[in-house]
Length: 78
Length: 224
Image 1 (cartoon, each protein chain N blue to C red):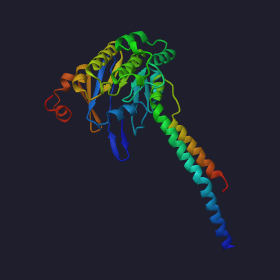
Image 2 (image 1 turned 60 degrees about the horizontal axis):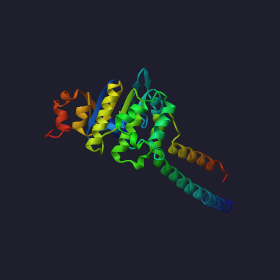
Image 3 (image 1 turned 120 degrees about the vertical axis):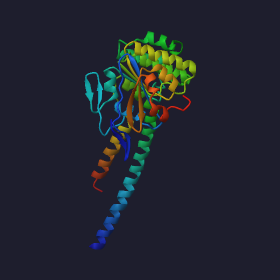
Image 4 (image 1 turned 90 degrees about the vertical axis):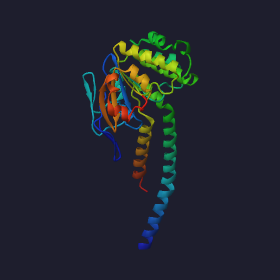
């Protein structure tokens, strides 16, 4: 029984790694790309703010994406 | 305003203000906290404690977009204009948002009419700063906060900027600026605030500031 338990735990850990690692890496790349895009558009945000327009900035957006992704990853019954 | 980065205190009971129809200059050595104070006041950074008072409103968590709707304009120490838009398009957006914008007068003040159809990257550094100030002045703001508006400007462009800021103040705008071009700033300013060690000290008008022993010793050069 103990033996099967250990095997199952290992299998589960392997499955988590197999699924969550690419997802995490993908998220890092996505957030990096969004942050880069944001750095290029930051001037525009100041101009828009001076017009009285509030925009959700890309770091805030990417933070939100990361938070949602993390919740989803945790909810999946590995 | 009180602000720390980790355990390092940056602002300690720092205050700055802008007075209608006058230019207030915030001076201080590099790293004294000038830009941080402005960024806190505009909501780009959270403070440990502090309040922004604009007109009758008090903001514990200020937001530039909200302050801008009430009549503030912020000229950051980095670029303001969107790379994809020409100066004309910026002014058009401004006029759509604020129909009372004084575009023609502003173009005249800063001599920017000839390059209205150019994008920011097609302008020289001085032209770009004048274009930014054209947009700022066209808003006819109640208060203009400009972080280092003279940085990297040739004397001729700096003169245009000086005259433009004076004209804005003469029109009733409360102007608050920072920078290190001391002679230019002391000549332009009506009030001097000195920032050192994260704290601000009001020194009065420039002539009075020049007599301040610590200000001279800590900030100005001995030959000044």
